[in-house]
Image 1 (cartoon, rainbow over the protein chains, first blue to last red):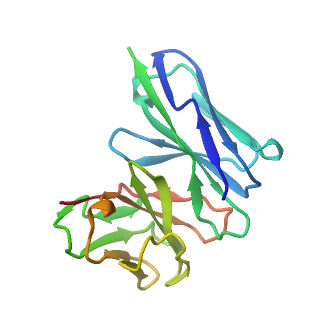
Image 2 (cartoon, helix red, strand yellow):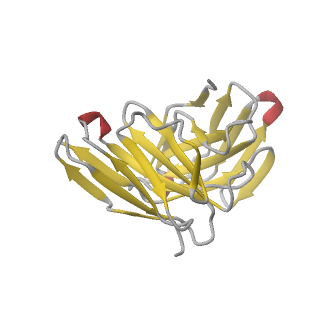
Image 3 (cartoon, one colour):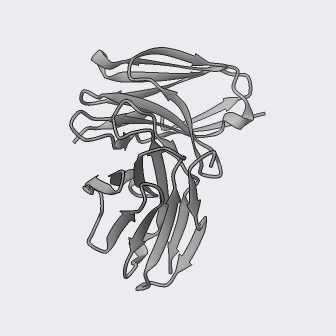
Length: 110
Length: 115
């Protein structure tokens, strides 16, 4: 089956720093979503981004489907950015179920 | 409602008992999904509903797990004869339709602990 690997697995930042999270996938995908799981466990939608670049405030994402990766950029990080970031993909021919990546755990300190 | 809701938020049960978990999708969403998040397995797909039918049940781990959806809205996930390995957070998601081009939105989850 498809492998969805995220890096780094863990990241500690000081408030105000920038970071780049990476999602690599081993096969062609139809769709890709980025989520933030907050400390209470809620999965929050960040981006729906099968290809191209999108920006939302301090966050932006880029997916290069032909090269099988996606990047999530966090600028001027805040303590509220702490949590786990997941990418998830939808595979051709598998209806629309999401296959999740391994996650990046981010801690932003003061 | 404004988002996907799930109940109960927490459930503690004894090994061997049956449990029912409920999901209310976003109003108007025809597609509904169940996922499970456990420490050892990460986030994994269980079952997908389009309307009241389940075209993809491939993620259900055993025949102790079943799910139904009635009226194209509320869904119930039932686990019979619970085992300790069933302990996990069960997440429900919905999307406008079942196509891959539609974004999925998740509920807060039900944390199941089997003692």
